Length: 393
Image (cartoon, rainbow, N blue to C red):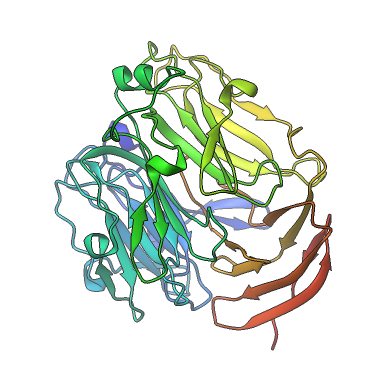
């Protein structure tokens, strides 16, 4: 709750048969920091969702927290006991959850905010975390870090890292030039870190074509043209009404880079501040439609949210997997996904796992790993429908 307006307890509502009950007080989840992003994830693989919160956007002394689900409707703050003791002056806006080292448990990434550094907390098991950002090679210059993601952009089965920043207006205007090709990266450019598979990452931002400084607040990753490669949607714009930058979309070329196709889409609507971005196949036609939360912080900003029907899949094939729990890992002929409880800011995607397949009419091998380590494999799975994969006993 509240973020920019100061500390305020969060609220937890329990769904009881379609009606909601405020259980904040008895749950212990009413964290009182200046929160911005909250994420669900099963950090100890016990089948119950734990809670990770980004606090301290106002440098009020509140810090990111993790809460263990006690399996009885209550939560315990185990941040410090887990080895996470952040200085009160750091704070955070963006947090991401993902198993970057593929050891079966969820790790935590915190995007650096201004003078605070990026933090990568490796999950050691047993509610112990080790900060490894420097050793992993995911440090970057001081930046106004907003949302961040774990996602496998190059289909090698390893989660890579994307960090975003809300860049200053002058840098954004410069980056919107058609001939913009910087000699070096602006501190507030998005950053793409490729997972090398040995616990380390390589900064591949320049070669991937993501060197533009943008005023990113919300963002999302999804295969919007069903070609088998994850694309990027950046919701941009500082709350100031004078900032008229467009939301941006970058298609994954499948060759290690991304192409800015904003000018060929309806997303370039200046003045609509981009916050949450979610992807859902609302019409069940096999491609992901986009809901973009737009509008700024101020009452005078009357931008409307936008719902975009996807017309870009071009007849490419697809498959979707329903019914998997948060933390499940799915591989389809090299493409890798993790089922997220939530990610980004201001929006949550359905937990359906969606794969674009390009011209392929079937998946040769589909493999699912449940958080408890159970696995199932299906072969020669026909494309263009949604399926369920049962967990083995």
